[in-house]
Image (tube, rainbow, N blue to C red):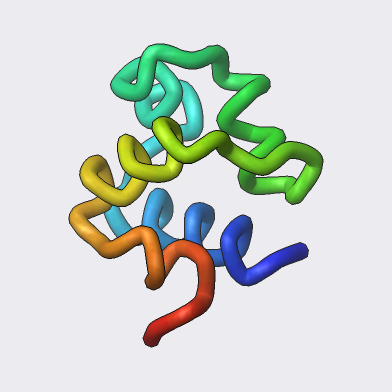
Length: 67
């Protein structure tokens, strides 16, 4: 697992959300979101921004560049 995938899972569980709920909000499939959490796929820039806004964190935090 990467820092990115670990942080996504951590943020989602802290908010008590399912992968389906997050995926629906982002307009992607559950499978696509799950791939991010499993380090099987990396988001493009646009999706990275959407994820950061959704979880109210910076892209740097998601990428492990800041704590």
